[in-house]
Image: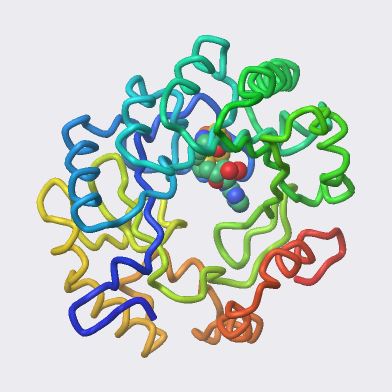
Amino acid sequence: MSRGRNGLRLHSLKYMLELTSRCNLRCGMCPMDVLTRPFEDAPWDMVEDVARQMKDLGLKMRYLHEMGEPFLYKKLPEAIDLFPGVCVSTNATLLTEEWGRKILSSSLSKIRLCIDTLKPDVYPIVRKGGRFDAVVENIRRFLEMSKGKKITVEIQRMITTQTHDESVKDFREFFRLDKYPQAVVIQKTCEGLDTSEVTELHQAYYGCFQGTPYQWFVILCNGDVTHCCYDYDGTQKLGNVRESSIAEIASSPFLDTIEEGFRAHDFGKLPRCAECFKNPAAKPPLTDRIWRYAQAFPWKDPFRRLLNLPNGEN
Ligand SMILES: C[S@@+](CC[C@H](N)C(=O)[O-])C[C@H]1O[C@@H](n2cnc3c(N)ncnc32)[C@H](O)[C@@H]1O
Ligand code: SF4
């Protein structure tokens, strides 16, 4: 557990800062469509303040997104420079040559380009609003521009019921990655947002994949902090960085509410957890309980992958 006597153990958490909640796509698997908070940008003074506090506390920002498309944030290169080692995940629709140049002259060490599939007919279902050919062109150009630079380029493959037959090898060959040693293919499974959701992209999953409530420290663009990377609307708020310091938020009274809820399996005050633990028995399903222990082992990805096979479990 990442909670000690004095609150969250800040050094054991993973940090995300959402620069904007605006997005130019409405991907099939993404909760952008159901977001109830405003579409807006993080105020620049807040971004600077978070960077200052994290530096003083010796903490490292991992991602510059929760929801939203980071390339819609005008000061993206400046934000990157405030957080050494940060990764930017993008739908790559806006990665023009000009943006490529700007990004490559920032300190960015890792970028994730989410094309998700190589099937032109599946792409518009997964990445609703994007143009397959344009994204392929953007990625190919960026691979060329970033060659020999100190940056890791991740190309994301999303495993869904329609893409399970694609492979990392297919992606490597399609983008000729043998020519680009800075590039790798990463795989991700597509997850439902609640235990009962089955869509054309994914099978139902069995509950809180993160297993324990304290792994993340997610700062939304309005300053609200949530402890869960699935809590896209910030319904389980620990505090707000515009009102309290990170250190103060680490001892939020809401932590007691979380623990009481988990102990009693009463998610009345935890709407996000309630989605993940939607279950008539008001108990996490057996698979979820197993999952909590399974987290200690490095089999997370193969296990998730299995769930996305057609006719797979669930
Ligand atoms: C919410 S997006 C925000 C950043 C950017 N717009 C992008 O698409 O990379 C961040 C990541 O969440 C992933 N994502 C969205 N919905 C998901 C789901 N249901 N299951 C798994 N990953 C999901 C996307 O593939 C993307 O890699
Ligand atoms: S581009 Fe990213 S934030 Fe936008 S809808 Fe797609 S996955 Fe969600």
